Image (cartoon, rainbow, N blue to C red; front, side):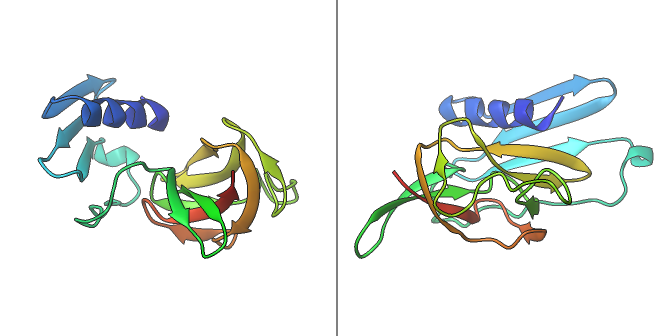
Length: 157
């Protein structure tokens, strides 16, 4: 099961009244539990031989609101949308060393267009924009660690 399938399951659980789901596939067991508050926990059991070091995601702050990739925010002069990190990992602006950047400040971005890569546990996850607009600001340095729900880009719709 890849990270996109897990993210879709988390979204599905958040939209329903299901409290917990466990999926076992190829000797790997994934349990997703929903609390009464908007925060969520993902627990993954992988055989020890396949894990280098355990990585744990901190729970979102009690007052945070869920959409993981975008949120309306107001600037003193503009209405900007924030693209946020859907996971913990290392942020990369290009597909590899020497490769062109996915997007730059001033570039037009469309829905579904890749904006960056986040590496988590040796998996490279392409992050796509869920909004259409112009990139106003890149908020994270290349090859920097990012947290769940951390703002990555500001977009002018």
